[in-house]
Amino acid sequence: ARAMLEFELELLKAGIAHNAKVYCLWHHRMWAIDHLVTLGVGGVLDKELALCDELLRLDERNFHCWGYRLWAAGRAGLTAEQGMEYTRAKIDRNFSNYSAWHYRSKFLE
Image (tube, rainbow, N blue to C red):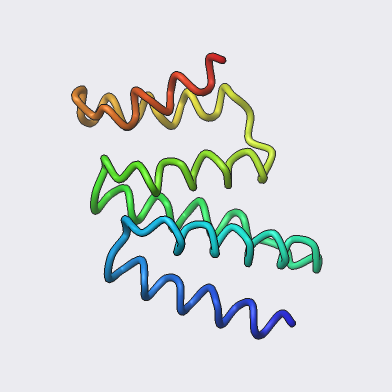
């Protein structure tokens, strides 16, 4: 099962590289990650956060990736303070990054 799920992640990564704004790719990725975590595979969520960092460097306003990052950060147990620090760094880099502002507000709820 692990090998198949890891293959799914590679397939999904290729799909996201082709078009990062397709909902079903992100939802299927969540499904695959949840199953890998359930299998006890370590480091999966750290890799997902790193993938989000990479993708947000390419397109800092990709709300699909921002939403996925919010999910992955929550799943990884990151704190609201860590989320605020992350969004602050993105806002410091580009003050008009609406996506960073929007996701920052999620940590204030």
